[in-house]
Length: 177
Image 1 (cartoon, rainbow, N blue to C red):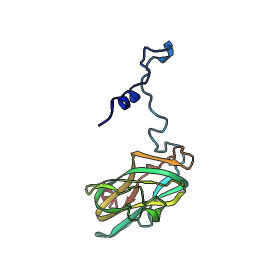
Image 2 (cartoon, helix red, strand yellow):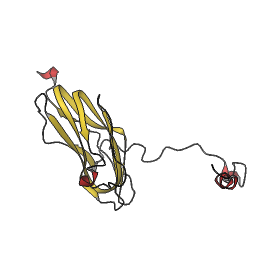
Image 3 (cartoon, rainbow, N blue to C red):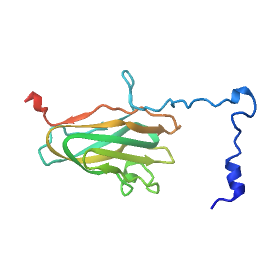
Image 4 (cartoon, rainbow, N blue to C red):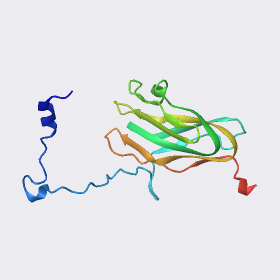
């Protein structure tokens, strides 16, 4: 339980009526990095890569997360849409192989129906190249894998890093057969 002195320390911030008129409470502003997905004409430094785009039914496909710049931290939500099942992703057990600190928990959160969250922290800010992965079992049809808007990454200077939301597509489009 917190002592009364400690509680008072936390509540000693000036109220909006104290001081000059410039102390008036302002509406919260959306941060400049609220959406780190690269927009049209912007170059992303983090993106998905894979060397297979026509898997056979039942194949396990590995998609890697790649960074062109050294990272301090990263958290990305990835969507796998179509007839596929997520089977694995980078975790605390192997995150050091991808440049992250294994002392910082980085186990993924994923739903087998197609949503995954991967994260990592590297105090030395030198995670670069392949910085994570996910695996899915391809079943049939067209499957797309993309990083969603629920993402953030910061470089060695703690500056926001742009992330590509461009989807990787696997399998044939059933409308084009």
